[in-house]
Every structure is written in structure tokens, then in C-alpha cells.
Length: 360
Image 1 (cartoon, rainbow, N blue to C red):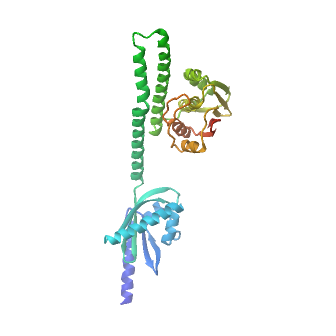
Image 2 (cartoon, one colour):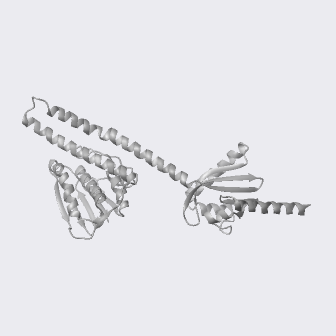
Image 3 (tube, rainbow, N blue to C red):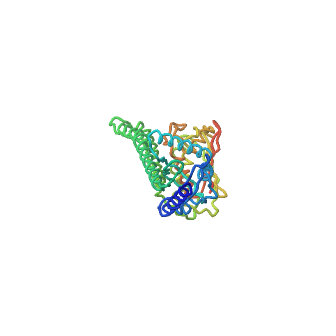
């Protein structure tokens, strides 16, 4: 009788394995034997897609170690799975399911919805590929986040300077204003207009960068010409704060990169220096050996502030002359630097100044 039952069980397992091999999802069949959770069968789809062999993952413990190599994430997955098992038992269900990111044998990480059907000591675990679905969700989150940020910028940061322009221009149009009184208003209008245009350009380029619409077009660059062009735009800002700009630009070199992207990054570096340099301050712009460096003797930054900038968590602050800003200039610069295979470094000391370098 026992032999008949054993024979029937062997046939049943054999049939189960045959069915599993025809299914379109990776499968693990496991059994609890003497208290040990042993993996006893992997179907062909599992070997093809996830890659581990039965010899590499003979137990659930070895599966966890291979599929979730990060200790913290592995512990998080195990805890979540154990809780799902408890919930399923309480609800009288014979299956458990959850989502996790699995590291395959080829080191690629893929999201799966893992479903386990448990009958006595037999576990049948299926892996449904949801990687594209998760990627789409993340993309939608990014789009929504960008939309929110854009609305915030357009609704808050641009409203104030535009309102100021309207007020200043209205006052300038008053009939009883003398030429002497009119001149300062023209200067304010010019300053505000430059700031608004700069913010609009930064916003546009930031949104394009985040929506991956900027294409890199590498050409031979004359960095000296680029820097001088940028400085001509902000000449009045430097004059207003009486900032001395020292240039040490190597006109030679073989720098090949994207003209637009490099200009955007360089402009962000220079405008930040102007913004945070005090009246009668000094800025030095140096380019040599394919490294652009902008240094100032301004208010400087703490290590914490530098960290938030490099981690894209920084929020704008007013400059030494109450200049406006959006907090996305350096974030944009870092995103664009990645696109041209360059990197940005920041060195700074509070009340002593800041040095930002673009290294090609």
C-alpha cells in the first residue's frame, strides 16, 4: 500500500513538473522536508529568465541570498513575505503574493509579482514579470513630479518678478515723473527682465532635460568665447554689485562637447557666483586642461548644503543683493553634465567663498 502511494506521489510530481515546463512563467517547486524548505524543481522558463540552477539555490535561504544580495533589502523582503503568509492564513487563503525586485544570475534587476500556492508541505511559486509595468509607473511619477515642479516655478517664482515689472513700469509711465526719477526705474526693469528671462530659460532647459528630449551634439568648442558671451549678458549685474571678474581662459585645447549644454552649465555656475558674491566681491573663471572652474569670495556653503545640492534636494535662497532663484539651476547643471559624460564638484567654506568645477 505504501509503495502504491509512493508511486502515485512520484507520478504526480512528474506530471506537475511536465506542466510547469510548459507554463510561460518562471516556476519554483519546493517542499518542506524535516523542517527544511528545499527547492526540488525549477522549470525551463526559470532557468532561461532568472538563470539560477537548482545546485545554486537548493534551499529558500540560498534563493534569498542570490535573489536579494543587499542585506537590508533582503531582510525587508523576508519580513514582508512572512507577514503575507500570516495574513493569508488568517483569511483562509492557500496562496501568498507580493512584489519584489529580483536580482537575476546575469546581475540584471527585474520586478516580479511572486505568487506561491501552498498545499500541505508543497509550495509552487510563480514569477510574473511586471518590470515594464513598474518602469511605466516610475515614469508617470517622474512626469507628475516634473509637472508639479513646473507649476510651482511658474506659479510662485515667476509671479513675483513679473508683478514687480508691472508695478515698476506703471510707475514709470506716470506723467509727473521727471527724467531723473525715471532713470532708476529703467535700471530696475532691466534687472528684473534679465532675471525673468534667465529663469524662463532655466525652467525650459530643466524640463527638457528631465523629459529626456535633449540630444547631445558634440562639436569643437571655444570655451573662451562661451564664457565671454555669458558675461556680456550679466555685465550689468556685475556692475550693480561692483564685482571684479578675473579671467584665465585657455583658448587652445581640443574640447568636444555639446555647445548648448555646456553653455547652460557654465551660465548656471557663473550666475550662482554672481548671486552669492557680495558687493565689491571677486569672481575668478578659469579654464585649462578641460576643466572649467568658477570661484568666488562670497558667503559660501556648509557641507550639509553642498550635500543637498549634489543629491538634488536643494531649495533656492536669496542672493547677497536679494537676487531671486529657483533652486533648480545646479540640479539642471548636474543632470546635463551626466549627459555629456562630465561631472561637477563643489568646494566651499562659509563666509569665505565657493569653487565649482565642471570636469570634462
